[in-house]
Length: 330
Image 1 (cartoon, one colour):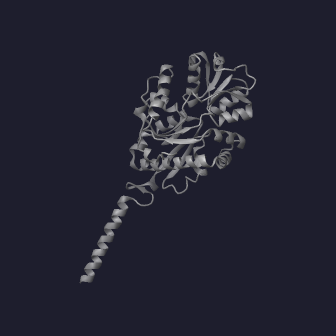
Image 2: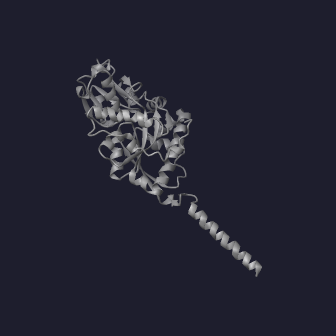
Image 3: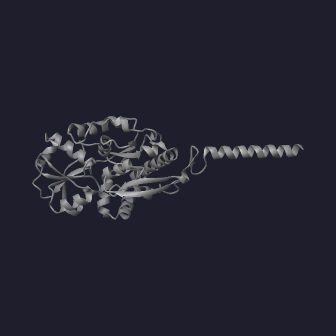
């Protein structure tokens, strides 16, 4: 009788332990949410290569959730898709969140990396008579509206006393801008790497002015508020962001290998990619630091120039819940 009672007690204890383990979440679970049921819908920029970076760094191996990818030409369309609910997440430059917030988009900044800005540039044809930023007055300048290049162009003009209205902005996405630049349909092009490197290599472009001293190099990770409000998708986003940060560190430590994989996965010329990679390392930052104040300068500049419909308060679109996976030394 005692033995039977002992066996019954052991069985009961094991049952309780199994239930507790299930409640806490095992493989593929976080906070009781089964991540195997989650599909993260991620937007990727062709020129940014976030998917390529994660693959190269081995950070897409063993994800406890599924990922579907959509490709975009620049940051603004990614944020439009997040606001529309067709994707959950994407990485963009410093200006797209400002334009999206001014339009009332349901987005939140959930992470940030600062990148080298030598490849953030305004380029002109090698034999162009344009020699200084002041020479841009009245010229046709290709730029993706609402992009980091849009901000770079704005502050470069402002520094030499020119209003944005004193140039002729040609709002073109990078592939169309490259064609227009190569055929002489525009006088200058405000752009970022690897397109800057591509313009130099394929169209003989000359850098008129790069981003040093003009722009921050912020690359923001953006999530939709609906995704953040869902516990399972939020848990998946946290894991995904941690993987992005590990991939950043890998790229900094393996530049040559990263350049080769990036070129192979994107089909862009290897020398072009190698040049871009050398100019653009990653440094992950906590959003709770001075990032908000520095990005507020971007928002204020666009508001003062009348390029957004209303002022934007950056603190209102920042969510710091994933700051914990940022390594101070990164």
